[in-house]
Image (cartoon, rainbow, N blue to C red; front, side, top):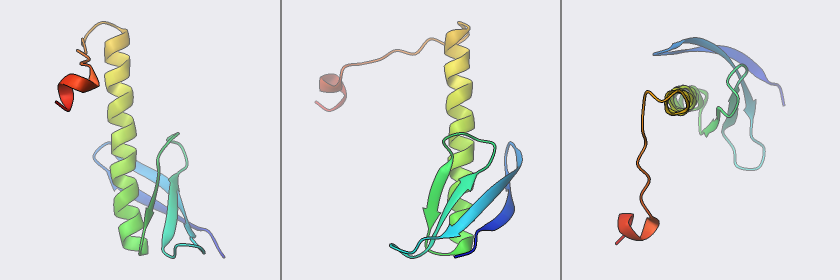
Length: 86
């Protein structure tokens, strides 16, 4: 099964990805080459590309929030699970 290299456009720029046919589930797994943790799957090439855009944007946004919390520009209030799901 051949890997497919492509580029996807996100609201944060254009990123290189690798799509690979998934033999067990069908469809395609997809991974962003320069965004650690951005991995997804889709039934078709088009869906896999759409899903990796969401994953890339999510990873970038989470990293921005974590960095903002570390430098003190954002304060995150954590609640216990019992309060959230009560």
